Length: 279
Image 1 (cartoon, rainbow, N blue to C red):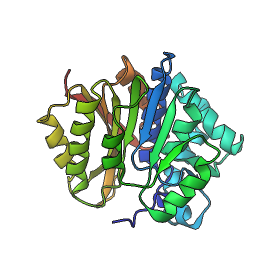
Image 2 (tube, one colour; image 1 turned 90 degrees about the vertical axis):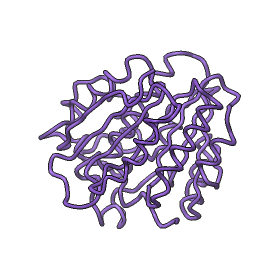
Image 3 (cartoon, rainbow, N blue to C red; image 1 turned 120 degrees about the horizontal axis):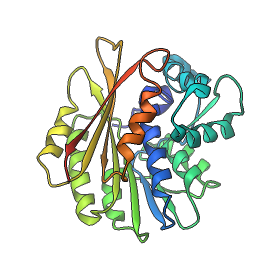
Image 4 (cartoon, rainbow, N blue to C red; image 1 turned 180 degrees about the vertical axis):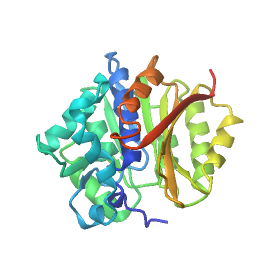
């Protein structure tokens, strides 16, 4: 199924959590000079117009990245700074944001000489937009299934690995496929850092993924979740990130970042953090 378009949801509260975790992982891993191979399994179109009809139809960015931007002077964690600097480069210093980077753009913004970024996208129109953007971004685009493609690309030539796995989960089998892919990838590159995003739903479907990983072979899985303080009656009520092999101190620093946006006048979120699977 290729109906999902992230433009309707770009910059929402889940993107804030996801990209906070991603940029923190990038910054922490780049404290060492060793090159990193970066993979984005479901890249989307890389850059989103927050004034577009699609974005305004849901207006999800208003309670997500726009609210974060409005309170940027009050954020106490220094780990927000790299993310805010990227947003400023794309938007200037105005009171609202016009453009929001998708995951491949965050990877590209942080990439150093020697690092590589590979972005997978199967949706035809999203893939074309991604390729057009990638020509000047130094990103390799593969228009193929990102889960199967990731496994084929491992192990990478670089000594370190950072992967973001974030399908839309429109298809119920995605939960099982993500678990299967992580196990295959981990067996080929056990030292890699893997970030897995999942929605928290009123239906509880995400528990399929959690249960599979709890009983699987992959070790050292950190779970971070944010939940809306005023959730809808149906649909997505929160957002989760699983981080395999997080850098040392990652959990404390991510928690400090999200502390800044809990409750009101933040993003109206509550967070929880625990080790789903210990080392």
